[in-house]
Structures are given as C-alpha cells and as structure tokens.
Length: 66
Image 1 (cartoon, one colour):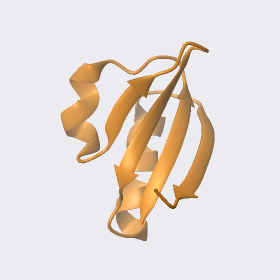
Image 2 (cartoon, rainbow, N blue to C red):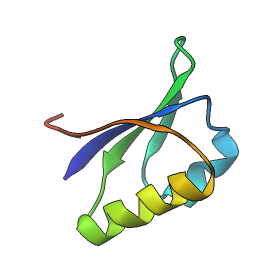
Image 3 (tube, helix red, strand yellow):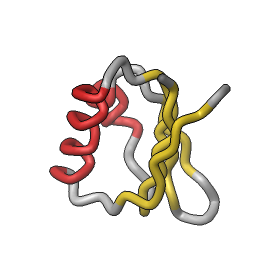
Image 4 (spheres, rainbow, N blue to C red):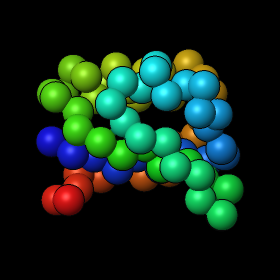
C-alpha cells in the first residue's frame, strides 16, 4: 500500500535511509511529506515509532492511490 505521511517541520534528507523506500519532500508551509509504499501494517507501525523517536509531530497519515 502506498502512504502519504505529513509531519511538522523539515526532516533532514540524512534520514532518507532510515525511512527505507519513502521519499522525503519539504513543503513551503514548514512540513515534510514522506511518500511511498509500505509493505504491511507492521512496517507502518515501525515508521510511526521512528517518527516518535525523532520527536516529530504527525499531522497526517493517509493511503494514496497514486
């Protein structure tokens, strides 16, 4: 399943490898989008735990058709 995750703040591109196949895009509104395929629910929870460990605020989590 493909997901769009939006967090508050700009996540440094350094973390790209930590978030596996998700692309990191900075928005002009001061948020970051992480977009890509996540293989299953366990992998999704793992990503959410990483976001929590970095102290990021989750603003949006949505499946994407694209």
